[in-house]
Every structure is written in structure tokens, then in C-alpha cells.
Image (cartoon, rainbow, N blue to C red; front, top):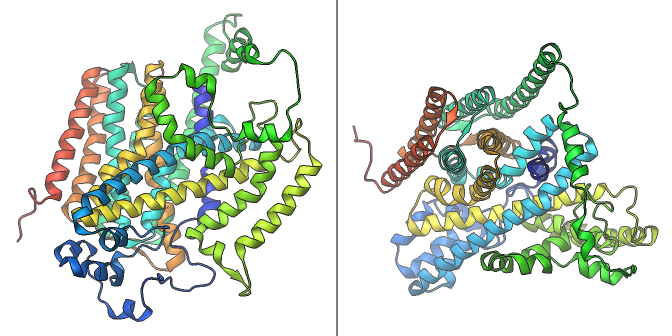
Length: 584
């Protein structure tokens, strides 16, 4: 069961690096050299000095809207909605609490969208791609599993690094998530299920993560990221992947040798694959047969389409609790929209989830979603030759391809090239996640302006909590099911990927677009508090775990939780100026 859960969480990091180069907001569109927002007069941008947008709350109410519209610092390159203009131009001052409440509600719903898209569409398609490419479990684990867990963090980092003013949001989110995962999540796992940790993987992961944190500390001290530095981050992750593969191979080679020379082969000793086959044979009864109709009938095309677009399982609905039903009600619109726009290939099913009418519809809708979400729709509305928009050409081409596919295939048998739908679903779901992450970053920046909070504190709190909540529940579930070692290893393996690929790829894309180094604007003392706390949490685990002989107890878990509470208190006191450096 745990292995199947892991298969659904794999993610294709190498392929995503190749495909997402054009998906990050802030990339130049085909029709523009320098992006200028429509609400800014061209002359206004050049004449208006750049002032910190957080100073808007100190102005008169009548001047706030003009300040937001004319100040370049208040403008975001990506996204579909201008949240700052909505607060200060469309809501009267007395309704500011209502606007903030609506924004926070929309922020929570965006986190829900991120979770549903990653769990039910992004990761299953990447599992199908890994099966198609026949990658080994080691390679797939350090790439697919890591990216499946960290997709929201990576996309948020890519979006935030596209603008120097929000780079602190990315650093705060990556560091904040690191502190959260290595303290709250790791501590919660040991509290739920004390266990014996694996020594060699623990030392390997924590040393690599400490190196990554040290490199980021140096990067913040320098205040800029060069091309070699960004490539160094990605190179370090490649080295980490190679190390994991070599360590696993050496361990298996040593274990195979010890088994051969120390004990005879008996029928009771089975390999992992043989155990899987035995367990699958002993539990091969398909309980779904009880719910199949006695008289077989062939569904019509319309019935197949209606069933494929239905996100609700009525039998599961009757068995679940009221909390699950309430959450499902909020998920239904998102799941329906994603079912309509994102194809999913399931290698474990006989028909590989082939739904002819819906998959043919995907050939029209999925490319349309891609061009309308790529750089917030800039590519989609671009007119070819000044006559025909790109989205019209995409619809015509998709309709022609869908018609050929519909008449050349049948409802019962998937076509030979059905595996290509996994790549289409991967790209479409990746762009949905990117679009949602862009809105998340813009909302957090708007809330930071309203409450005069730095991007770093928003990143280490709201963004880190929102992006890590899914991983926390998944790891806690694994611990309760009796797999605490697996969950504990995921705590360190996932955040290594997040910080190395998040910083490295985000800065690399920004450098490739601007042809200059990425400038960082650290938010004073708070960034150093954040980096120091993450380093201290790693040193604490590096020292305390071996002292416990790798037997992790509940006391260790409660110590980690107490560490996070103290860190959060110090970070907030630093943000509000209670803790500060003395001026020389």
C-alpha cells in the first residue's frame, strides 16, 4: 500500500526543467520587449519614482488608488487579477476588513486547488510517464517523489524569483518550509510512532541539506546570484541523485553478498518483488465485482462522457464522515474543471483510463488551457500577423486532431499512442499549478502591503504552511500506518529538492531572461534569523539523533515542536522591531 502511494507521488523533475522554461510568469511575450502593464501610462512609468508600496497605508485615503496605479513597485508582472488595485481602488476604506477576509478565503481555496491538482492529476500522470520510460525505482524516487511532494513550493519559488521585490518571499518560503518540515513534521512523526532511524540515509540527507543551506546563506550575504552559482545549485542536486543511486546499489550488493555467504536460501526467504506477487495473489479478490451489473451492457458515448466527468463517487460519499463531505463540496468545482481540461493516464487499469469522448475533448481543451495560462494568457491573445489570435489557431488544430482520433479509435480499446496523453496531462496540470501559485504569491504580497509585513515573514508563515500542509498530512498518515522511517526520510529528501531546484532553477530562468545577475533584497535581520534557525534545527538533529542511537522517541519529537514555537516567536518579534540590532 505504501509503495502504491509513493508511485502516485512521483514527479518528473528533469522533464519539468525542460518543459517549464516558458511557464514562469515574467517571461517576455512574443509581442513585447519590456512588459508594461495596461493600467500604467507609458510616460507615468518613467516619470514616477519607485517608492516602497507598503507606504500606501500612510497616505490619505483619496491618494491611495492613484499611488497604487502609478507606482511601479505596486505592479506584478504575472497573474490575472490586480489585488492591490482591488483593495485600494474598488473597496471603500470601511470595507477593508471584508476585502482582507475575501482575499484570505481565496488564498485558502488556491491552496486547495494546488493540492487537488498535484495529488489527482499531476502526480498520476508523472507516474504513468515513469512507467512508460521504464525508470528504476531509485531514479524515480529521488526525482518523481521529490517533485511530487514539492511541486507547489517549486512553482511558488519560480514565480517569486521572477521579481526582485518578491525574491524574499521565495527565500522565506523555502527556509520557512525547511524549518517547518524538519521540526513540526519530523517531530510529529516521532510522536505518533517512535522508531529506529536508518543511519546512513539520515547522515547523507542531513549533510546535503546543510550544504544547501550554507550555500544559500552565502548567497544572501552576497546579495546576488550569478549564472555559475545557479548552475552550482542544480549540479549539487544532480550529485545528490547520483549519490542516492550509488549508496542504494552498494547497499544491495553488500546485502546480496551477506545473504549468500551467511545463510542458505530457503523457501521462506522471498525478494521484495516475490512478496508483492504473493500478497497480490492472496488478496486478488476484486470487491468491485459485487457492484457490477448482472446483465452486461455497453455504455453509449454520452454515458461514458457523463461518467468520466463526474467527480463524485456515490458509494464513497455514503461511507464518509461529515467533515470529508464538507471538504468534498469545496473540491467538486475544481475537480470537475480539472477532469474537463487535464487527461490522466493510469497504467494500473486495464483500459489505462481511456475515455474516448473525454480524451478527444481534451485534445481541444488542454492545448487551449496551455496557451491561455502560459504567461497569464499573453501568448494566447497574441495575434499572428495581426489577424488571428493564437488561441483560435489552437482550437482549430485541436478540433481537427480530436475528430481524427474520435473516428479512428473505439470506446473499449485504448489506442497505441494513448501514453502521449500522460505528457499532455503533465504539461496542462503543471500550468494549472503555476497559475495558482502565481495568484498565491500576488495575494501574499498584497496582504504584506496592507499589514506592512515583509515578504520574508509572509513566506515563512502563510506560504510555507500552505505549501507544506499536504506533505505534513501525508507523512503523518504514513507514520500512523506503520511507515515512520519512510515518512521521516521524506522530510529531508523533499526539502533538499525544494531548496536546490527552487533556488537554482528560479534564478537560472531569471538570468536567462534578463541576462543579468539576480539581485536579492533581504528583509534585514529577519532573513538571518530564518537562516540561523534552519541551521540550528539541522545541527540539533545531527547531534541528538546519534546520541539516541537512532532510536527516535517522543521526547525528541516534543523538543522539535518546542524549537519551532520558539523560532516563530523570535521571527515575529524581529519583524515587529522588538528584537533589532543596535545602530553603531
